View 1 (cartoon, rainbow, N blue to C red):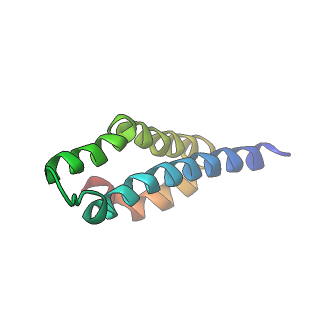
View 2 (view 1 turned 180 degrees about the vertical axis):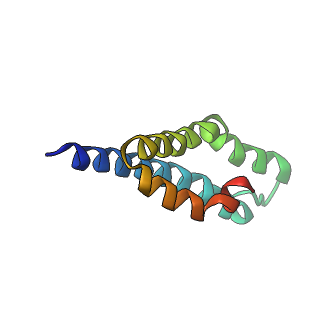
Amino acid sequence: MGLQQFWFVVVAVLFLGFFVLEGFDFGVGMLMAWLGRAATGDIEAHRRAVLNTIGPVWDGNEVWLITAGGAMFAAFPHWYATVFSGLYLPLLA
């Protein structure tokens, strides 16, 4: 396996890790309408309990994206320039 293939696998694994972990956050957000609903009791307490499940790992997921971007910048600068110039506005928002 050459150096380019190695770095491609590293960048792919980093992006895959980000998408898997971030998918959990998005899933919890989409399910808030059902998971946060309580038949009895305080609705806000149930919503807070659902949000507290992703609270400890919320910022840790972003580290995967930053590391993947840094690895892509180091290994494939032309690829990095193409991808991030197209995503410039969404990344700033």
